[in-house]
Amino acid sequence: MNGPKFDAEFLDGLEQLIRWRRDVRRFRTDPVPNELFQAVLALAQLSPSVGNSQPWRIVHVASTAKRAAVKANFEQCNAVALAAQQPSRASDYARLKLQGLDRAPLQLAIFCDRATAQGHGLGSMTMPEALDYSVVTMISILWFAARARGLGLGWVSILDANGIASDLGTPNSYRFIAYLCIGWPEEEHEIPELERSGWQARTDLGRYVVHV
Amino acid sequence: MNGPKFDAEFLDGLEQLIRWRRDVRRFRTDPVPNELFQAVLALAQLSPSVGNSQPWRIVHVASTAKRAAVKANFEQCNAVALAAQQPSRASDYARLKLQGLDRAPLQLAIFCDRATAQGHGLGSMTMPEALDYSVVTMISILWFAARARGLGLGWVSILDANGIASDLGTPNSYRFIAYLCIGWPEEEHEIPELERSGWQARTDLGRYVVHV
Image (tube, rainbow over all chains, first blue to last red; front, side, top):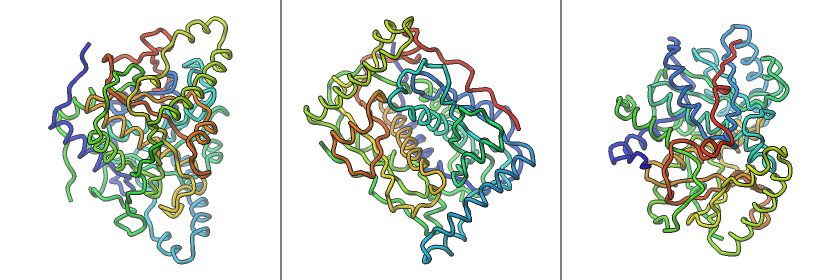
């Protein structure tokens, strides 16, 4: 069997997608059509996963009460994070826009079912965290599939995982991985917001390869 | 500023790439040109990361001695995993081809520097594992960039993380995330090898969305 060949034009498009996929925190409030969300979700479902376990579990956070609980969780964690900043950076930190919880029309809490029977445990005995990594791989695909359709996604990690699980009432075997804000971006940028704001530019540090 | 628009033809190509990106364990032995690896690595370096921390650290495992150590680590972990299988599945497990360590021309051990100063800790105080997840996001991009150029990638997770770190002599702050085998695939398939072998098919379990 021959696989598809990807031509130079596609590779250019893929590079554009990689370059323009970024974390979005500024959203318009018009809703994401459900058929669009389902199309993106169907592609994400094709993600690789350890043992073909597909351990991702998705909670759509839609109610005002649940969104308020998530926002309160963020505010509390962010206050602690601000207090822990070096004094010279604290005011910069306080000015950063770190999430779009107030406006993002579609909000998903993503969990990993560490106890799933699917896959029969293959590949996750010595490194059970490989299940979590499969969920992150799924999120990466969802991110690209969304961005290619014009949607922005922002990943919120300044959260207390136990608090989120408790607020959303998820089973004990679910491990909280990410909270995703999804919607139409207010602005388009190729440069990450943290770089534009002067917080942290990309560097070459992660590019050095050690040979052994 | 306007971002790029992705047309229907590109979206079709992206779906093909998502469908045909799979875990490869059967490699040809001809080498991966360094300029091709560098092109893929340059795209992976554009991955999102928490706080723009780019915490991925890459060890290219090239020497016979280091590859033998990794293979021995796998053999030991896989024997334990086989012994832990349900009796009814053990012989099926033993028949599976789970890695391409003997033949893959390019092999990378991927770590997360949990102590990196880049990003000034933003976004990883309450969930330090967000740094690991950024590394997985980088791997996802590397995987797509490689596959789009015809390269296959296999992710080996049946490994003892401490043993790998010890064998490769990485700093204490490095957390082992994944061992990647990269090369030209011997065969092309759209269906995952674990599904073709009857171990585990994809299901719809990860597609159900709970609304709260």
